Image (tube, rainbow over all chains, first blue to last red; front, side, top):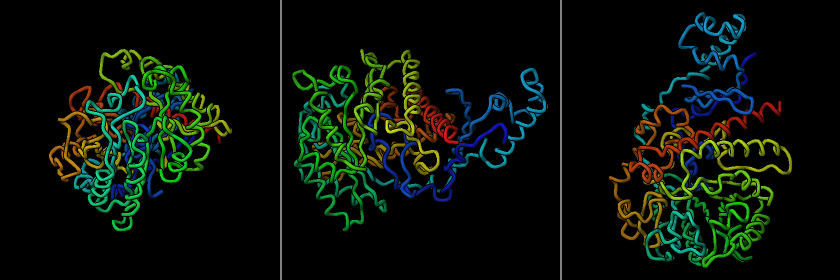
Length: 46
Length: 452
């Protein structure tokens, strides 16, 4: 495509049937402890 | 739903439901103000003074291609997903307050200089062991369990930390669990033996430092006054030098009094720390250091400055990571996590030295928010249900927010402290989160283009 470059096709739908395993780390346990960013947690099934 | 923004000369569009990200040219950026709500002929009519008809039709074709591949304006069906509706959260993470005491007197401490509005106290090994046993027994089929040794300052109760950690490892096989330990420390009590122990036994070490010496020492003096920077920096460097590939964060707090925090993060990097984090202060409205709406533009500029610094170092020996810019666009957390957020009060709890359970460390000390006890295994199911249901679809401000699947509803404690309701997000926190997300995504787009 001339006008668009895709950086990522996204991953939100990859486990839509199960919605995920729930094993990923609790966001507040990693570094922030005061503000919440869930999107930067790692996937355990990677 | 889409979100588009400009940063650093790039035009970027996100497809909210799929997580797709695209770099677009200015023409597509303009077209998306109208299309696909209006047809191509109407788009041509609206933009004919700026672009040729041929180019506009060509660009609309590109947009159509993405729509057909569900990479733009993709449908959002998560709210009615059966797995989401029927989910039964179990506790899998615990913040263990092993010491409600501290050897620093940080000006902004949300824990009231370590005692959380209570008396100074240390957790017994017995209470700590009961806490880990409780976690092992109440975590269902979750295998990975996280325990953060927290305070106050946890190294003020280091022998008990060791005893609890060793106990956890001793019951892993019996309950088929894998305990992952984090310790959050101010570093004052680190010595060679403790550094060795932490590097061997802690999966993650979070070290508190606010940045440059004057900045750090202004808000993080030792008891009685004096510099903590001079004491802790050599110790932190030693710990990191000997840590190998294991996780750590050097983590600071910025306030209204040091809004130029990008310099402090750069200072971390210049000290040799590769894994950094810097958080906006959590404090009550009206205090001299509380961040206000009028500070936002200054803070946004700092996030931009930090991003450009990181980009300039990318691929060199001088590069470093920043926690909030670590967004994994290819494979981050699963969607259920993105809907439900941090899990405080349902998947994540804090335990005090006395064994009291709170929804998270930031609620500790507020008696109204006490939700049980490790000692008698009492548990306020009603309160837990309130937290379980505090997901993005029950927060009116989140439902229509483009950042909802990255931020996942924000910090409950901030919402409660500022708005008295965990379902009403803290607005400044939202603004900062959105800025960090845009910047993180911009950086990844930029790196992709640089490496092409």
